[in-house]
Length: 317
Image (tube, rainbow, N blue to C red; front, side, top):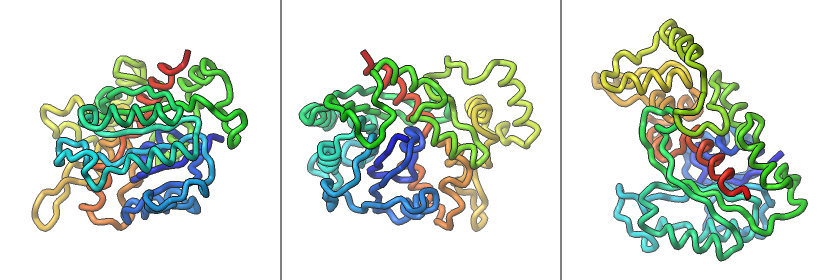
């Protein structure tokens, strides 16, 4: 089983996309820690990334990390390296010391114009090749754009034995396997999805042109959605996008809930939009504000999986 180490884990969206066996994670946000402790009981949390001695950490085959976006985001002040939340150097140190087979990284699109070339240069300086691309959640059928940058960094001096990795075949064999449903980048995500009654999208699905289901299957799914009380007909001009995601996931929850006589955004609806099984982030006793913040900072697993598979294929000779 592929061993995975996770940085800035949040609710684990990037790790759902990668799959494998989570060996450890590094997270300090109390709400995210509560969710992770529920889904990954017994998995050690290394805590504050700035205080970790990586020479004492268990080696893994893959490191994932959606490092903080605030230094690069157009929604912030874009201070880059001057921002106290510029934590990329600690990510680089983790990768340099652990030397996994792969590092899977994610950030906002605004990173491309601030700090991105430095990150790519530092990835190369520690002996990794990097493939990167922007990818939107809407490209795999989600009803929102959520344009993100994904990086797959490949260790150019990959260990011959490693930690029991399933990744010791040729690059071409590995690339072929990553497009199948039993890929190490999909098995765990589908396990978590089926546990909650939701099947995530197939590995290797890139764009709506991919055949996630036949036309007949989509019509049948639409009827099932209708029979189970879909609320998609209340979304006006967005109805087509909502129905599409319903066909690929499950019926949409109500978009708002009544709180103290006022309509508020429903966290369960945002959880659905992010492609997560119902109850993955909601239902853990967290406030709506904390839940929505966590969801807003998270990764859509189906989007990440499609991006990762495409970049792995691109990196193969």
